[in-house]
Amino acid sequence: FYCWNHINMTDKLFAEVAGAPEDPILGVGQQYKADPRAEKVNLSVGVYQTEEGKIPVLRAVREAETRLYNAAAPHGYGQISGNPALGAFVQELLFGKDSEVVRSRRACTVQSLGGTGAIKLAADLLHFVVGKTKAATSVPTWGNHNAIFKQAGFDVSHYQYYNKADGTIAFEQLLADLRAKEAGTVVILHACCHNPTGLDFTADQWKEVLQIVIDRGLVPLLDIAYQGFDRGLEEDAFSIRLFAESGISFLVSSSFSKSFSLYGERVGGLTVVCQNADEAARVLSQVKQMARANYSNPPNYGASLVATVAGDPVLRAQWEEELGEMRARIRSMRVALKNAMDAEGSPRDFSFVTAQDGMFSFTGFTPEQVERLKKEYGIYAVANGRICIAGLNNHNVQYVAKAFTAVQK
Ligand code: PMP
Image (cartoon, rainbow, N blue to C red; front, side, top):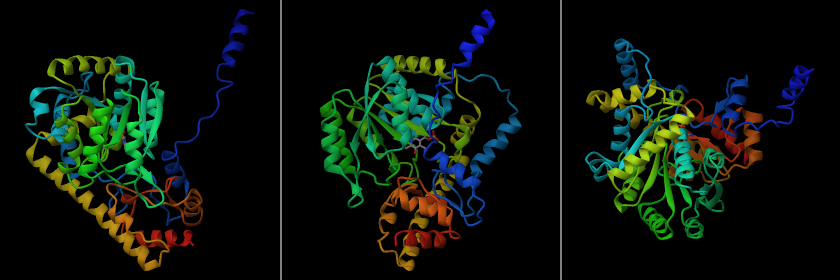
């Protein structure tokens, strides 16, 4: 009798659980896969594709894979903080060689499960160790910013970023919104290649944002998932170096998903910039606790690939060249789309596409237009109108321009 009673109770354990909605971006990718149309185009997920529509295996990464294979090292556990060579590389990319931050050792870096994992570690550190409860994200933003901070126990508020009327950064509103935040609010900023708008601050705008952060006592988390995709590795780190020079404490989430085309290997890093080396060592010990209780230690393979490339001057130069090729192809596709829209007689000027930065363009398409693109043309975009420019190539750009023009009429 006792046994039956027990089973009845456990039977009901999940009875009331509601189904969660599909992820707005990854869910679209699933729909794309299931679409049988040959002319279909996936402009939804933020993944760089080649002119042939393939995710590249970078030549530098391929060589690193060969070296790792030949070394046939055993698959032992790594450190909780991950591959130390990866950590050093993250800091070099963020702050530059011989930077004050690196020399003083006032920053610590922990390898993470992609940029996502870095943001989660940051949120856990700030909430559970430092005691922060409020966070603010841009409107719009990459949806996972909100989800991660909510899941880590934060009240998430927002600051306006985009001006729908003219397709620019709503800078005055943004400043007012940031000024109104309570001291200690964690502010998530896109260091470059803002996702989804493709609109970045100018150098002067960054200085104004930094001043408000300092004046209001806000806690910045700079998310850099696309370093090297806007103007170059050094140039794209401008905001991070500006914040570092100011002497404030802040956090940075890095991702190698795009820059090394290692999406599924989950390679990233969380860097916490502190006031001195002693503070950084204590913070590191706490981040390690967060990691330990979450996934114990990060996977070795992807980090070893990145560290192998970073540690060999020839492979590193090759990687930088390949990153440059990806950046240049995206730029050329922006121009190709704008020209094709002109040729199709688009009712709206698409010059904004060539002015935006990074992998994405915020097209201004309504959810209805996005739905028509999918239904009538097999072109998949995100419901908020975001398209991934890297999904375009010389074979599909005319077709896309034709469809983009048709759904506007
Ligand atoms: N931040 C932003 C703004 C992103 O767009 C992404 C990827 N879509 C990430 C972080 C996380 O990247 P990943 O976890 O795949 O490295």
